[in-house]
Length: 143
Image 1 (cartoon, rainbow, N blue to C red):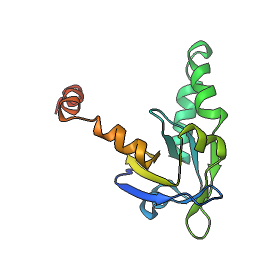
Image 2: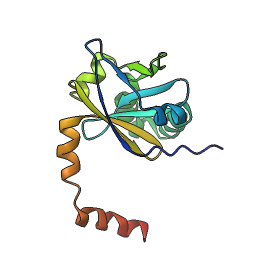
Image 3: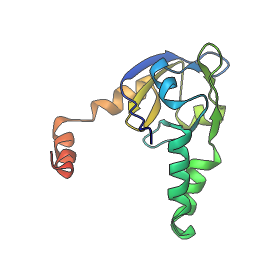
């Protein structure tokens, strides 16, 4: 099984039609078509077909009483996208609204997924990640 490792941070602009260039390195790992859905903390999640299927399988394995919120959140507004010849994808308006995307966006690699953030919101959010908060989380990794 091929493992995806999405890393890095890339700034791009959304055009007036809602299209944005996906970083080349991300396109290579995400494949010819992939999925965008609502993410947490005000961003969008970008998942390869493999990761999308994995998410779907895990949610479907849960009891409906626990899964219904996740199903509604992740699947109701999701879009399957395919980059055009210039490497652009169209982000549906509902997803742009969810993440409050303006002209400037930041793609970040988050291991097995990418995230799309409004650049200003990403700057604010990332400034809250202190060395102490990261050190506390690393304790759980036993590193």
